[in-house]
Image (cartoon, rainbow, N blue to C red; front, side, top):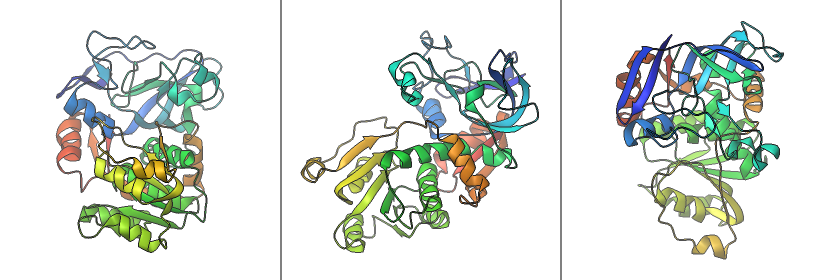
Length: 352
């Protein structure tokens, strides 16, 4: 089959490889659309991070570079292994791209997203989305029903946002701040509104992304280059601050804004994957007992996201698809666009 594989920094090639084989309890999916993730950009521009470095195979999968990229996967079931009952051939599905050990304390506790040996299809597994087929464990293959596979390719990043929201503990009637209106910041905003959080403030510099945040349901978008974002949030909340803030930029000023704009005893969720150390003043966090927490990927979040989409509570997500390309063009028309023209792009989908 044709596959687009990652060999290392600035080295992606489309070539012929063997099709993955299905086994008992697994499902073979004919990939239709796969989103390009910010993680893919880091792998391409900075070198292996989640992908196993050359000479260092993954401890769970045994996979080493080169690997098939792409983990925001949706497609159609092509074949099912023995014992599979959740889906059947022809079903449209979204793939939760996990490979986990099912043995560590976190897997046994149901928190498989922090499995000590976790791997991902498209990053450290034997198959991925930038190929004609992938194979995934039955429990990680989620039926889409009448939803399109284009929307299905958005389920994975929406699940990242959903998991961060679950971690935050926010409830309808409370107030939220989302710092950053990139893909995940936009998805957090959209899901907050979908679950009944009526007041969602955003902080964003880019004029294009400000408009996207408004389209996602933002109550008000604050430009920190035009006014003091923390002061504005305190003004809007009667000096109290928001109940929950989400950091979705990966920059120290953004995280500081999230902490300082949050109420005493409130929660700050850091969603970004940082490639450098943060430089922040933690005095206010300590003095006001603000809770700062991390969030990693998703855990039992795909099904709730699909339900929100099917029920029409999470609407107009197609607006976040800003490009559709072939796998052969993933660098020139995909990765390069998302790195160098990121203000105009949210999600570029790849068809293998």
